[in-house]
Image (cartoon, rainbow, N blue to C red; front, top):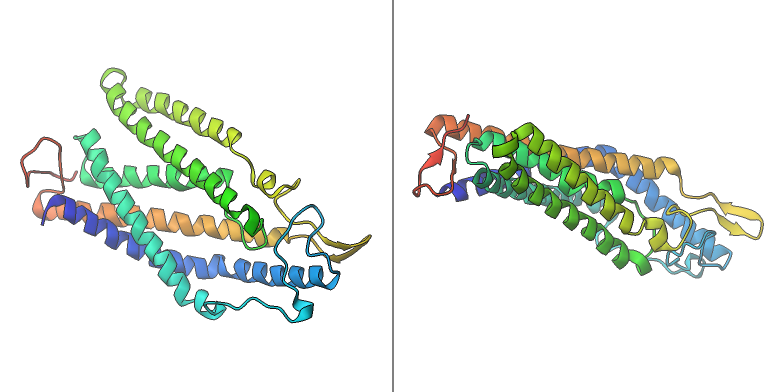
Length: 294
């Protein structure tokens, strides 16, 4: 089996294990907030239908269902399945995808920095993937539970997130390549500081240019306000504890997946390097000539 195939398989396996660990974390940290958010969305729909508005104070529109008239949304997949098997399936597959991404990034990093061992390349690639692929986009567009925004602005919010993600990953990739070239003249510390500042300038400019969630939903705040019937509050606004718990849980899940996949991949590549005296092929070497893990 080629070195490329081994690192891809190692990345997929490490990502899958990390994804399953992330699913456990999700069940503990995300699911309670998600269930509370779904309950609130149902109560909000009922409250809006009861007063015949279909919209909430503050300009939010959530496609309210006329529960008073007996309408309801049928679940394609029961909530019980979503909160159990669905979590392990979706988060596990996401973890596998992230493991593959980190493995490919580690392989590419060794092409840019040939002296870097496979184990260290995996650790660096995983760290950069967490920062550029998740934390930076998350800082601009943190995860939101149900009832934040509406179907009308879903496309805009999705495009905005992917735009931030693409800019961050592209800028991170360019930063790595430039740092490798500058290191020969400036040394690694100065090169990393220089490209780090450049990366921050790019992502901060992108964050300032892209619209906020509140702007996309057309309200002063992204969090729905209370449901009003004249001067009376029928239902309080979105619980801050729910959205805070959901966002914190999402952050913990992503950290578990990226961190777990990175550590496991580095361990596997390091073990293979010690056992076989080789890990990942370097550019310009003959087929099968590998770099010893250090």
